[in-house]
Length: 139
Image (cartoon, rainbow, N blue to C red; front, side):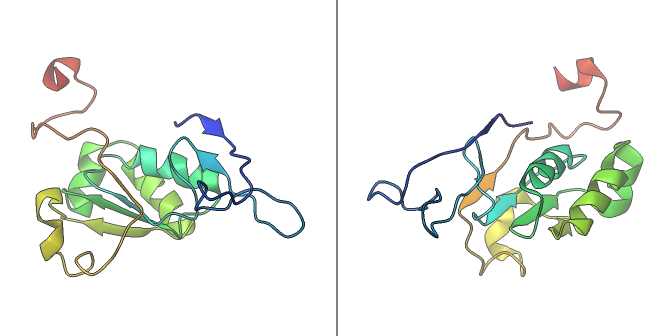
């Protein structure tokens, strides 16, 4: 999971986010490069553990759209924790899309007109079949 830090800028010209809190100013929780006020697109998710961790740290996933190349049934078969991670994300308000090819986002009907502040592609899958915990397959 990302290392947590809080920025304490107070709306300077270099601080377009305006985080902090002094007399009505808002404080935003940042996790490395991500803020709950960013619109975040996560592509190529496997078991959705990263997006689930990020949403848990923010306390909400309403700003997140998490996608996978695999369809829901394949995810549940492939990844032991996918079902619980997806359930947590749904409960926290994430938008979840399956069967999304990250190389063709501009053609996806739900994504082509959206704007995102951050796009995260953590660990592109090599396309092998089998269990994720097999180190030889990952290598």
